[in-house]
Length: 391
Length: 247
Image (cartoon, rainbow over all chains, first blue to last red; front, side):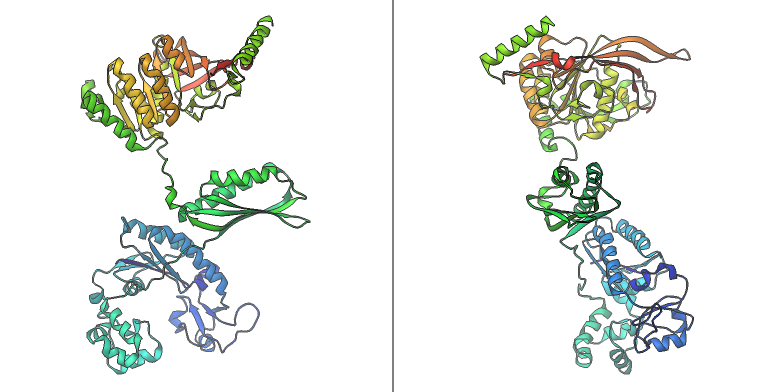
């Protein structure tokens, strides 16, 4: 197992790139003109706030006392979750398993990926585009060691770990994902490094800390269970366009619906999915919206297939009023992998059949009748030397 | 005018006797799928490209530009299809002449067989679905039917290059373009190309679209487009005169 971890800002901070560069604290109950609820805790603090002693989990009142010049903002879980979805979509095609957390951690399980280096480079580029800052990257045998490695990388750089146990051994046991009380207990037991935790038996620590103790020993030993929860795209997608001013022209509607079909087809292609049901909605300026829904026999996945259906509807639609919005929704998706997308990209028949035809000709008339030219000495004045002929 | 009436009368007689489907106007036939070659030939075919599944002929006496055009088409096909095949019964095809057109040589296969066996090769490859087949000579008459049927089923683009096609070969083609050189193009005392008139001699895929004067530049390095139209002359009322028999 090889896991790449990209560490970025907490997504609550990433949704406000305009505040980059100064100390920012995200806490529940604050923000805007409303007074900060000092009974709440810090959810995230920017790198600039950390030197003042502000850490996630501390009371907001204490954070304000430590760093009064910080900008305090209220959390927006919906926006952060949306950003998480966007990052997950962006990373989805880079590795078989991708998990993104709002804490600003993105894991990619690159086991089995043919060119993991390219996936990691692309992940770095996409994370930078999404967050606006260079991520720290770690590559290790498991998610925990990858995260710890990434935390020790400089922005935009990768720390690669071959032997997780050796790498983790000198690090403080506070790196373990345990609560404050459990960490204090470890300290009392004299287990101050991950090497010390790894040296004792899992059952011994389980008797002290419960199930978390057993897991802590496994993590410290680098024998991590695969705990990544793969992100899966939602089985619903849609695209829409608003018209300002409202339109009545059918050609304009066709043009826009073709563009929307292109967008949806690109997304479906990325997911290897096809639309089993298609719904088109026209929202009027001064009337109830019109809607048309159809369930198709074979899932539609290409722009031509989608537009073939939707374009036909738009052509025969009689709008009652100027249209302000056009929605194309694909409420039911299903796997379209069995349709072997892009099978015909060579633009001719199956390659096997053509090659078989060549072989039959060679069997009947000799190997030399079918030959392929390969450039050899192209500048030679002798035509026979310019190409090697491969049978 | 009288000829038109006689023609209409003849058409009606055939339809009454053999059924309404016995004769179909070319304009009423469903056009085959085009393969856009991105050359002025596309306009002459009337379907914005060379017809898939049909045989197209480029004819004309030597040094009229037909082979230069065919090489340009072949190079484009190597970039677009997985298999572009040259059937070369005379054995004089040199891929070196193709290089200025920037071909994808990994897609190119040359089949060298004598004239009698070349029909078998063309038929087998058309049936198998090779994307583009360039015939550097005529195919024997007995292979024309199977070859046409195979190409029609698989959608292969077939282009033949001959000086003067025999009756059977001309009959089997769906599109025939005749080339006549009108002038050489000189620059700074050097021969750089030629001017030729491309005339649509036969068109079973769309109403004939007249003729076009083309300037064909011999490619010196990858300079495209190597061919451009100078004048285009549509044939008026061609649509009404083109009738194709289908029994």
